[in-house]
Image (tube, rainbow, N blue to C red; front, side, top):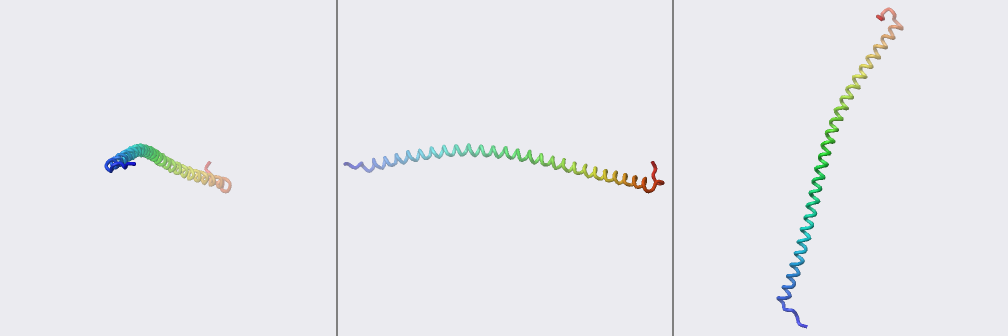
Length: 104
């Protein structure tokens, strides 16, 4: 058997390395493209979630405002109801225990 000449062997190694390097480069480019698309989709998802978050914060603010308003109205009602009950109690007491001081 005859050994191939050294320059031909080196050329063959270089060509195979060039082919392998080219294949690796192509795979790297494909992977980068896929990752770029994936990252773009993730940023879109982040944007959508941020919009949802802002909308929910707005709803929370509105609900808190409504809640404060309802609490204020309930307190006013309780105060008015207590005053009404107190007046009714005084009227009943005066009618039952001191007839001379009742106007109506």
